[in-house]
Length: 193
Image (cartoon, rainbow, N blue to C red; front, side, top):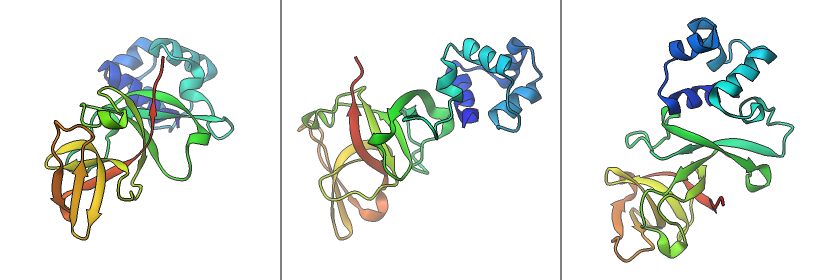
C-alpha cells in the first residue's frame, strides 16, 4: 500500500502530480500510476522517491505483512458530513506496533483542544483511534456532533446520548443518538519524546 502514502506525502507538501513527475524525470501519467499502484516503481525510482520526499524507503515501501509494525495515517480533521477522515487530510504517518492492534481499521488523530485533560489527553496529543468501533458507556470516542469533531466520553441511554468532556470548562453535549456519528474509539495516547 505505497500508493496512498505517496499521495499523502505529496499532499502534505501541496505539490501536484505534474510537479513531482517533472522533478523525478517521469511523465505525469507514470507518477499517477505509482500513486494508484497500477505500476510498481523500479528500485532506482523507489530510492529517488524516498530521497525526494525525505523519508526512509521502508516508511513507504516496506511489506507490512511480514513486519511487526504498520504505518498508520495521522489526521487533524474529520469530514463533518461523512464522519470519515479523508486521504487529502493526512498530515503524516506514525509507525505502530502490530501488537497494539486487533482486527479493524485504525488511524491517528491529533487532539484539537483541551476538553479531555482530565483523561490526560492534551491539545496536540497523538491518539490511536479504532474506526467504526462500538463504544461502551464511559469510553472515549472521536465523534461528530453539533457540527464539529469532538473527543468525549460517551454515555448512551436509549435515544439520548451524552458526550462528556474531562474538563469542567467544556459542558456536556446532549444529543439524540441519530444526531451524532461515532468516528471511532480512542485506544491509546502516544507520547513521542
